[in-house]
Image (cartoon, rainbow, N blue to C red):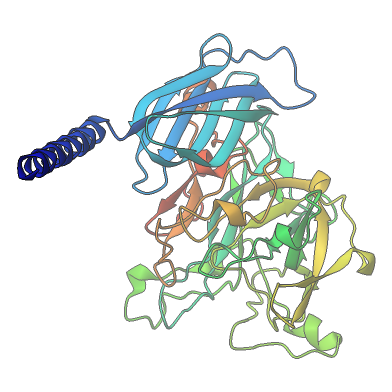
Length: 413
């Protein structure tokens, strides 16, 4: 009997040892499996597009953690396969230009898991290459604790081959959280993506030919047309905005409506014409641009009245903001600038206007840095046509870059 028990104990030990070895081998086997996956991107044309080849389209994928980027071209069927890439969350950007059109599309938050193949379809829109007025630069970060954000400006560039007129066009600052902690997407509340929503908007004055913009030239609309270099301890780090084409000034306009203006943030330079104030919501007492600011350039053919005002109440808040809605059909150009590289869920304009978004720093540290968002030069088109042509794929992820200091009029031929 005693021997039988001993035999049983020995058998039990052998089984336990066998199980332990199996677990160890299994763990070692798991460790040997690479932490990689595959991503298949199928490019398709947006509704209404035809006779456009999807062969050899440029596809770029960016890992949202380390911002590493891989690129490749599609095959004859519009398919791009990224094999054995690091697991993680990716942003896909498609940009492809020909002499006649530019294709552009974006997909966000695509998760690639270990040893799995993920398939995603990205729809692209086409933009013709005729050119027009585009937003060349948006500067709202501020240069320091003295100037604050008073030196902000927007620059509009003529990307065509002929003189265009900016008279009557609107500049609108789009309302909404930008991707900081606690942000809520504006479109989760105001769900109609046929519109963008502004809290402050102004209009370029003129009767039709007062504000010409020659080919390859630009105009600058400053918050304040002031020389901030004067009396500054760091003049090289400040702007002289007295060369602005126009400036914002809303104190008189606000007071005419029984509201109080803010002379701390707004100054009137009599040598520089003022923009025409169109809308300033009750949440501010001066014309200001958001930091970061998502901006749209709106056709002068658009009209606005009180019927276009909508209420916005952020979930969990008791404060209601009254915003002016703008039909996307009236938007000539738009640039979606968000807080950081991972803020795609908080876009303030639909992809038909801006297929992606841009930012100043990946981590969102932007206030008083002097950083600015500038549109890039289209080197191929510039060389082909012998004049400065800026990238315009309707995707600011592709078209824009962050620069260390503003570059007013920097591209003017």
